[in-house]
Length: 259
Image 1: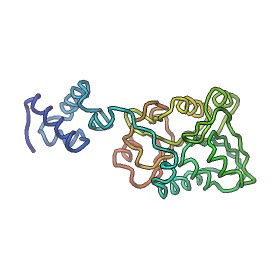
Image 2: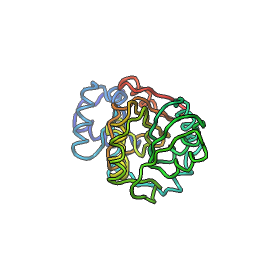
Image 3: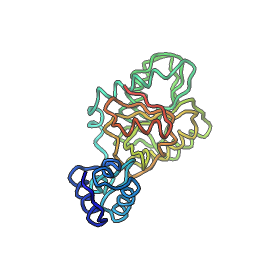
């Protein structure tokens, strides 16, 4: 333990640690510098206000990592990366669906894996995603409600006023939300504003909100916020989920399912 009581020197060292490591946590910093947790939090707030770092749940990360919102990968790239994890998550999510349910499935490559894994049982699926539609069409017992609108070819899903308005008369048991960014402080985010608007409308129409994402999305922040993590009922992810996500499930109160 290095006792560092000089405030300016300690803050300089913290900023250097963030640049070197990419991230820091409050408790280890307090132990390292021989100061209280409250003092470290003040240091982090000071550095965050000056743009040196970005606050996260329980610590901070290098601002250069989130200085610009995360760029949206190409659709074909998204379909192939972390595919094994997405398949496991899709199967775990599908296991939550029971006959008679009405569910909404958001757009995204993990959502497609959920659609692939759904058994051919009597359920109703509401979606705006072309890939989800394609995966479900061969399952004769599943009723499909396709939300129309304008096709966004970048992720092969439909958006716009028509899409949002179609949800006005619908109520669903569960909405399964794909995730572009998942940060405990800044919430669940996406690259595309019309998607955020539609997702919020889906959440409003649902009794239960389930996020489905592989662990690569944790700590990533995109431009448009969908909802805070506190509004989640369930998070389904892979076993690579970091410790802070596991801790947050108890502290914030959502159920965490690992696939």
